[in-house]
Image (cartoon, rainbow, N blue to C red; front, side, top):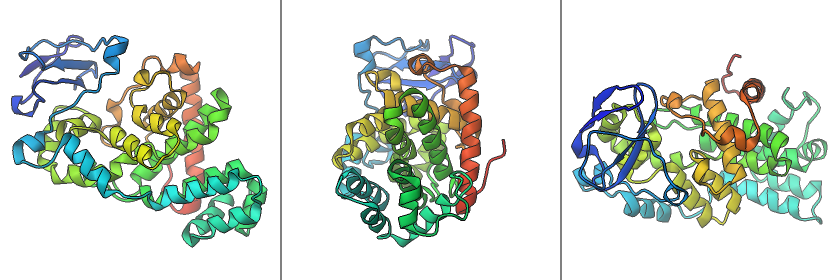
Length: 361
């Protein structure tokens, strides 16, 4: 199919056998990044139009017909997602520690000793907690010598964020071959989004500061489950990437759903807070989240992290900030610049303490 961007006039060809027949698909123009929408529910036309959805249409869940399912008989779409959900029976170690710690901290009868005991159940995490607690970021260099002392000095809120952060290093630090991401890339990006989300929440929604940090840190966790499936479909992924689309669109085209859908389903399965579920689901498109403030915060932080270059993926430049995000959060371009600089500095200070590379300003 020949497609022409109505904004810049650039024309390019999309293989007909790679298009989800009978569906609606959107992707950025390879030239100017203008959003192009093809409505394939009717006879395909070469003309394109920008998505101008009504409120009801914006909530519509578009189901993509997976390329791999049509070409090789492999599972795709709903069947593949069900298989993945059924195969992941329990919370991975990172969330288990986080939510156990939250449970203890929420109990008014619990003291610092009980909190320390939870952290010490994982010695690797305990060691990292001490490392980061003594980093320049917290201003306590050389002052914290035990987990119990860390709980007293840092306080519950900061300690919870620190546990969340260091617990994610092993989970998010692996190499993702399907997404073309090296070891530590997803971890550094996720850390940047978490820290930036906290900064935004602190200024615009203080009650969400902790939730913003946690949701920002695990916003891309769905990629961990999907990586192997994208790697198995490398040929189809490469063909889709040639059209200049994001990995989010590649996921939909090749698998039939994306990492935000899978992650939100997993969060629901694990009975995580609904606010986290919605933030995970809509962090790429907060405009259809029914005004979920946490989704807007994580979305904006994700954009800032991508612009900063921290843990950048090959498609980082293709993602755009939702047009209504700044107005919704009462932010401007100067705020984005300020958060960008603060995020880079914070990530540098923390990654230095646990042995990851740093990003220069």
